Image 1: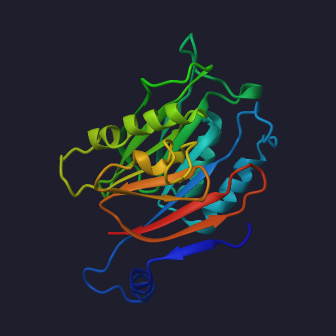
Image 2: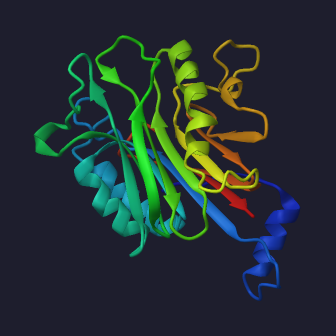
Length: 259
């Protein structure tokens, strides 16, 4: 799968690694987020006959994530990806719609609706999906999905934003922070949230469409050096890793947190 590139918060990384052998009372809990774009609609030139799903299953097995966000997948792909995450895992799906009918966009060869999935290892207590008010006038209506975890009470959301930068930024601001916060059952300022996806925005200081421009106060962003980003709240950053994928045109992007 290729060698990872890593960035570390050294003290926390040492603390977590030492805690693997004998966790002290009150030790930090690790949370691993895996973001992928699998290019599996069957329409785009990067499609490789569904083999990106095989590669993603292998990646999940090797990285053992707590949360998986998968863009450009078919609904029929998601049960297999979910099973790879774990026996208790659950998911929510962001259905991309077709303009102007509002019907689901379908993957080729009868593989079901096209969109993005958020998969949570410990199961999903509740969740939802929807589309953005801001759209770019193209044939795809961009969408989001969120899932409230079944055990630890954090919300994870996925999305795949417009290829038009100004629209993507407007969609990102529509999503964060209001939509994930709406799934917080406690209204607490300390509830943990993770929003990840192919945002079609890059970190570009000085640019009007800088990905950082959709990160609200109290949240922070980590990116893969291109268009995949994870935006989080009330989690402590530990490290990032990127892994080459050969059946799609995006790397796998891992962000490690603790709380």
